Image (cartoon, rainbow, N blue to C red):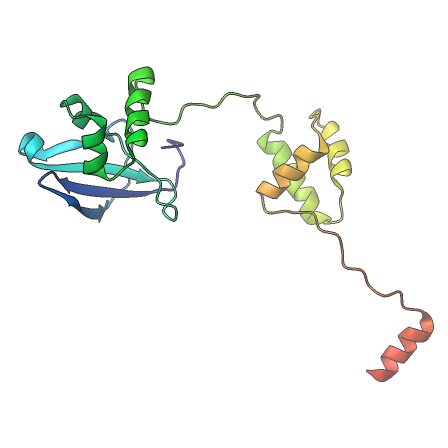
Length: 190
């Protein structure tokens, strides 16, 4: 569960019946969830012996990486092994989720450590504008133009930022040097 404000993941409801551990019913939510704080395993009817609904956010549907908050089952007294069998997840994943909840009080991804980015959104727009205007601009030239706006970054940082926006540096194709004689011959041939 990465970003609260701007993730584009699919929302699904999974129904797990304890009496049929291998049977899981999947439904797509009709409207997106507004908050991640209520994304918990909730008993739907009949307590622990009844039907359970699990709200799961799929980060990447192609790789099917599920992140489930299975705390209510854990709080009901079941162990890691029973939870992992019921949900079809590895035991280590279940343990990691429960440990994270106990330590931090949440299962959302925590903010990463590291230095914040130096390139502001405005500087990034300026970079993209300059490159789309003149595709032959080098990263060193872009570095100099950013220095005029008092943003000091390495040229490799500029290349990485442009790459994230789909602008990759390429070496132009080598074309044959055409002399005047060759130009006339090619035109007469055409």
